[in-house]
Image (cartoon, rainbow, N blue to C red; front, side, top):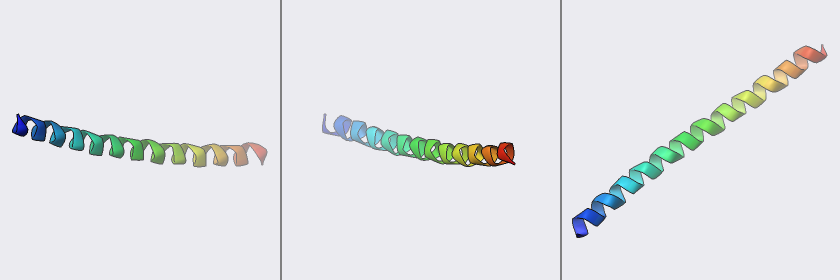
Length: 46
């Protein structure tokens, strides 16, 4: 049982790391989208 719990904890930890990476990628993409939108706004205004 103890080793099963340890395995479950390890899997959860790696899953949490994966989720953190995904969230970071989403945040980066959102930042890039914001930059693109502001560039488009500048182009439209000019």
